[in-house]
Image 1 (tube, rainbow, N blue to C red):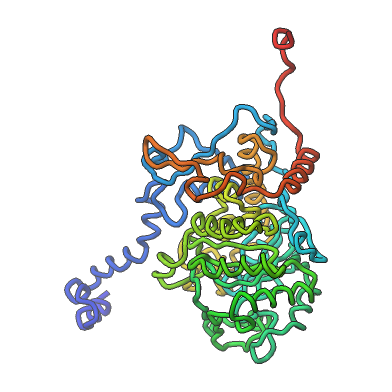
Image 2: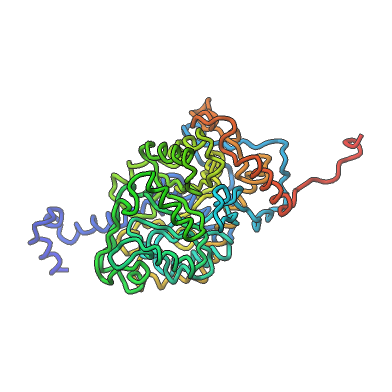
Length: 510
């Protein structure tokens, strides 16, 4: 203590320590654990960010198969929160919800559209789950975390996006994959860092890859590249990404294979022709010029993407400068609605599968997304919470205390992939159950059939606006085609038993 006091008195960097040796260190200690103190002691149930305590409690309880109900009414300030969504149930509807508390937990909830069918892709398919795991790279997440999510995806029958970091051994635990192609072409690049079609074919042939996703940008850091410091580039990461071990790994901010919408569509068609897989794009939303040009070319030339994944500006599995985290790219609802309108105005919305990401792993947000026209929702941070993340917000420091977002072997060993995979599947199944129950409350057989007239956005205590008016939708927008609607109703009514009541009384029969 004497030595520490002498050091503090003599050092010149911190006036507080010179004036209050040793004792002043308490201030820095309290500052360092401030987020934890606020998270567990000080903040109210709805004050924490990015996920409130109530939201995290729901995810944790769902993942552990514990009671995830809430009693004594909402503690949200509904009447005084502009933009708060209200879902309107129907007294009578086509779908009759089963009354059992366990109903819907194992429900099959496939996509209402067939991915790749509109463009005749040889390997078109109907995704078995409307809830899928978003792109999170091995390198950003530990190998154990990736493995837990992949095993969970296999058990849940959903897709896992590899993220731009390539297809690692941890992605090969039974779950079906969407292979994401980023600007650095990790996993499908040659020794010079250029895209290699041959290596892409090898990746697709050697793993259960169902679709390809070209990442243009992400909500956490749109139009930024990335850097994985050399200290984190282990032998496993180097082999997965196709980069030298121990050297800084840089992801460019732009693709080298195309430079405009026209060349992008050429590349999409090349990848689809060479692999037979559906090909889509992922992007955050900023300037709409790109989307207008893309939709015009799809309408006029016959080339096109099979799916579009919109990432909201509030998304954040990637670390980024604060200005990008807080202020660059539109939040999900606004960004998605503008892109969907762009396609719908050109009659293309029924030909494209729309996926969304950005806190859509919460039922209320997901329902609004489906009403706006989403066919699939991708969950990232919510899936991390399900396998143990405590929202410590240490993802960028390599010191994640639960072993989820770190390459530190000691920390990662604390995460058991076999046990956490069960929590991942429990969470996905519970989210699907809640989506199904809300769809039935709205009188329809599938969340993809929830129309915009089922949601209103509160403007204050005494007013609200229908979702369609908020985002400038026409009445027929937000739903699959008539043929797709009929087919998903047929599939769901064949698989999901309808509920009912006791037999009607004699009075009712008269």
